[in-house]
Length: 183
Image 1 (tube, helix red, strand yellow):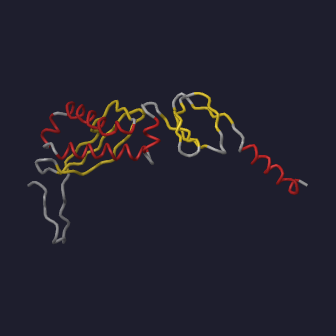
Image 2 (tube, rainbow, N blue to C red):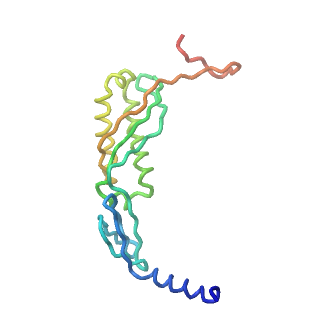
Image 3 (spheres, rainbow, N blue to C red):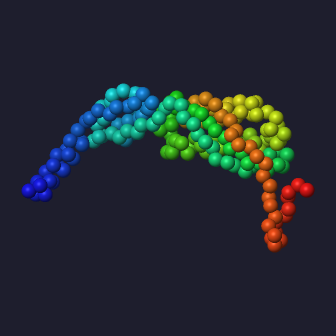
């Protein structure tokens, strides 16, 4: 009997899914509702009516969050090869920019930050990088903020988290490699 009338329950569940219902946006998030697919409406924390038949929505965290930048091997202005990584602490200040203009927000912010780190490290000497951590980090924060502002991101702090020289090792029997280790 259950199998014979099971389709009726599925049918009513489908019908109810098309009716408007409430969506709760937590205090840590914000969102955008696209009405008719193209008219974005910002959803701040609170209750919102969602019409599934004519709209769709996306929520995203807006509170402070951190991004661990992967290690990059870069050449400094004086030709030294170093491995450097960083950390960026940020929050979303304009939800319509990050969700309305970017397909993958976290990857886009990460890539933009990595580009700034690359630009700054390759324009400085190794000595400048080692002596001026605080100034470098302050400039890094400013440069990243300028780069990601168009996405509605507010950078709270950015810093290099790892900094180390790298060397190329010659493997025995490898005629193509050169020994770059200091003697």
